[in-house]
Image (cartoon, rainbow over all chains, first blue to last red; front, side, top):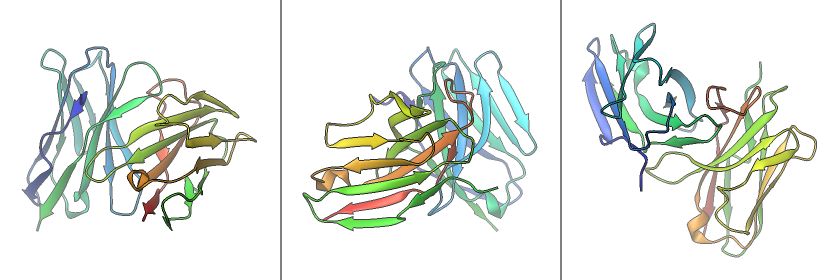
Length: 111
Length: 116
């Protein structure tokens, strides 16, 4: 039973446009959500996070939106740049150290 | 500063053999985590250390898997009698204090284990 789902295995976006990556979860006990970015042959790197008491968190070109009623979060990247091409993982936690991860979405930024 | 390092980067072994995977966390980080990532999936939690002790090993799939962190820094993941299903990328992460999910985990590049 997947508690965190990223239903799009891949996404292709034109450079300069907005990239929207989606994530759904089933466990209402999750209270902290994170996005990690992963390049080939490297470990995941932390990108941005959001607590369940918020519905939006912004950091430069990256914004994460949380809709608790829909158990849905999304990552917006604007404007998209070639260096953003990577696999993006959504992860969720419930007040301890254990994170439950989605399967990832491969983002391809086209020049 | 230096990030999390893992050795070897690749390990190929035969079914039934014993392997050790090493993780050097970021200096000063008290929390250390091991994850396993199979193809097409996200990382799956294996074990969490707080200092020298395994605070939670509930993610270890069976008793063939064992991990140690004797001095509270370097950790070794040990897999006995390897099986083909153990083939995956094994990721190590460390965080400054651990204990809650807001403590950012920093990942190493992983060790790709292939069991023939």
